[in-house]
Image (cartoon, rainbow, N blue to C red; front, side, top):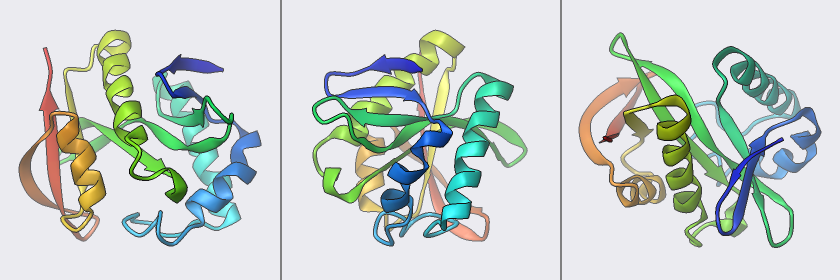
Length: 168
């Protein structure tokens, strides 16, 4: 089911039928370099999809499939989820794209649309991104979204930077 679209992307709910399309993305060592879990096995991809479906049911939102309008290919995901940071719930924007789509502004395009959707549909007023300091690509996307480095924290044993955007 489609959620919304941008000029180049359709964002829709992930489904169990997306498993095969996610294998080359979530199974790519370069794409998953900064993932806490790392490269996903087929079993982990199935669990990833199941967790997204549960999030849609429990919260009404989650990470959404990114489908390139031009070729109808699933190229990654973008959306939001709740993170508990220092005993406070935060809305984190998450995004991941297949390597062949890096550097085209698609992550930024998707994340901007997701922020707008979160503000309008769920009345979210604040968004964060947790990013490892060496993940220059993700930092670039976060800053293009208007996020600023708020603080450095330890998250699941990793030193990360928390970028944030307060809206409205």
